[in-house]
Length: 305
Image 1 (cartoon, rainbow, N blue to C red):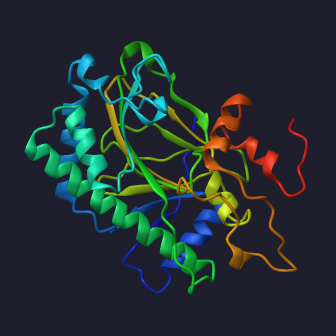
Image 2 (cartoon, rainbow, N blue to C red):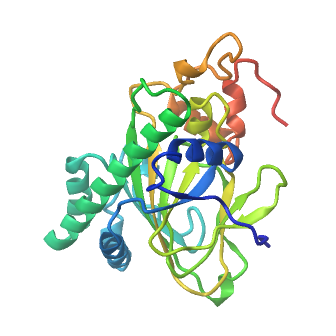
């Protein structure tokens, strides 16, 4: 059972210390809750309503959200990740054409298309700001954040009385740079691991806020300074849980590598550059859901236990 303790809360209006606070939270926790983030609360509410309506579509329509080259970039039906989890996916959420294709797949109405386009644009803009603030906090003010590709996932956990106490999502770290999560305003479930004590910490919902998680590529990017937080989703109650996540991933034509400005004679690069899709396959083939596969790309590899 997760203990009572809180992840950091960061106010985006605290301009003078924002970059430093973000970096500190990424180093110590690998996650934090974000307030005053600038995404309109009415738009967040509308997007939740759209997400619910899309998941209420017949299964044969949801199955149209399919990526022929990479199934993980399309709809995840129940019984893949878990018996009661499903997810719709919009790959390359920063592209208006990709948003339009996603909406066409699901016969989304013009009104809902507009909401999806506004929300993905707002959250994508926020991701660019967050990346830039992290660069500033790392002392790399002259370098530009490269946002890469964004994957947008609309998740539903179909909890019932029989699922209480079970995992909705197994323990894992995210593979990308970082994730911005719009969690459920009413149903708790997200738990993170305190890297110091190993204890599970419940990330209690706070309406109108967002959760920021560091992923495996973010750990590499920061030359090991950032913590790729381990987390899971637990079913606390028999109620449907809706979450919306934006995964900021490396660009398809660029390797994941340590930021050059963080490397010098005292701080050698801890990781060799690697292709992100190759890394994701390595995670799967080695059954490394919490980032253990990063050891294969260490400059001085350690044996995996």
